[in-house]
Image (cartoon, rainbow, N blue to C red; front, side, top):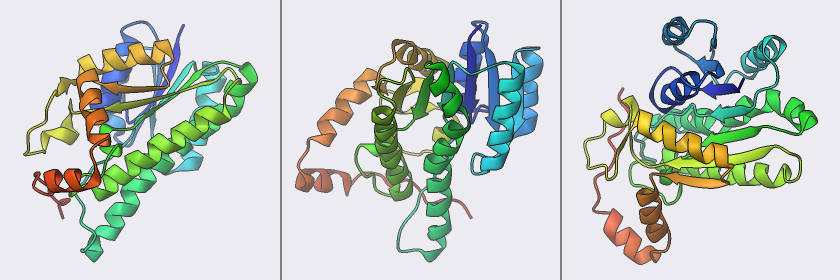
Length: 253
């Protein structure tokens, strides 16, 4: 029986991944702030979902959830740090500083706090996979998305460091950088989103990369090709092209 832990499991990519594994018989520990949505998922898959209403910024809450899950189910085979937020930000507005902080705390430190309580047990068992959901937005800075792009670039680099630290331990680290996936997060975007995937399709592709143990995967692959090309553009050309691109709207409120 596959045992999977997923943060941000109440909607979007996290819920799609949870459903993907549950439909294949896995037992899932679902982390998210919206407990009512987790309870609805648990009711749909009786006995298969251990739901934990928590915030990934709350390390003691995650540690308690990890202890509870491992005491009842065992060491997880896969831990997916998926929880994330995206809001438009601009450095010139002092009120955006708190938004920058929230995005970094959730998207980067939330990943660290999700992995940490499971890592010692996985190391001792010499097995398991840690999966971080990053983004192609981490490949280059996008206008209006300074906080989000920075957080995802940090996540990519953090996961690479973790992968090297765990080399030879039996614990694999997989970095997945999605392009545009149809979720509540992208539903608010008013600009074109090339190669956008439905969440269930994205989850299936991600699960395939996780099963293979791919160190770094971009989903879909066409967005990976676009990202590869953008990464290699000289700065002057990238700046010229993207200074005219639609900016992500600033966060509401």
